[in-house]
Image (cartoon, rainbow, N blue to C red; front, top):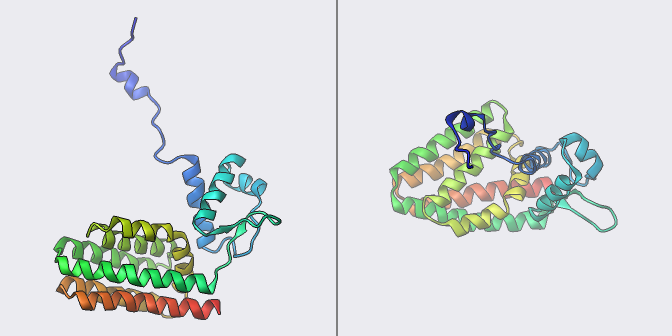
Length: 227
């Protein structure tokens, strides 16, 4: 005989967590690397990570493989997993790709005259300023990533955003360095404000120039830091 589920049975059912242990562990490790808890060149010992994260070795290995695909972890055959060292030439190439794609996205956003988009971008930029004021660097990174996601997805450039997402780990690793430099807390948002203002005005040329100028300034800072 089939037993029908009652309302009380439904209330009793255990809800699945919104994120798996693997996803939570991945977020923690990514934040620890980007935030500087682990420094470039630091060894990532599975046993220690299992204890710190409170997860199995299988999950730790999956997380490390994922971070390796993001460019945040290296795995030399004779040394084992370690935090990837930031490379000046790779950084330059990342900024070149960002300038091209973000410049294109900003131009298209301006040309499409979406008032709702401008309102959303301004709200995110205000959140970035608030995060800077509170010295909450993780929030700066999170909100900045959200800003660019909105920029790309609002114009339907999902493939371009997929390219950017593949580099998000390395972008945020670099960004975590540049946002700490003197004056960047005011300079960075001001550069992004120029982008939003140009989009609001429907000026594609100015929007692209502002986007590229913002990336160029960050690239110059990173180049100086990486030598």
